[in-house]
Image (cartoon, rainbow, N blue to C red; front, side):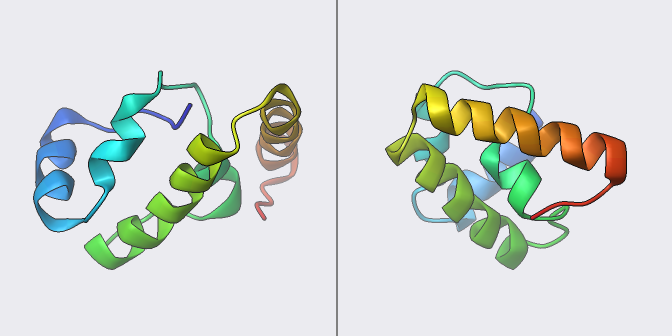
Length: 83
């Protein structure tokens, strides 16, 4: 599932970003589709954009997608390259 967010941010994002609570419906993970596809979000607008990756993951959850996320996470950790 999507990587967990700090509680203080969750409350703010729930108020300002439509559908943000949808990402809370699945069990969180250590890494996620949004983390390997989008850099750190430093604004509400970027968080809203990053949410689209989390919603895509939730809609398309599968072992294969988890495996792809795992491989991309290794790539990011070893080489510092996302996307």
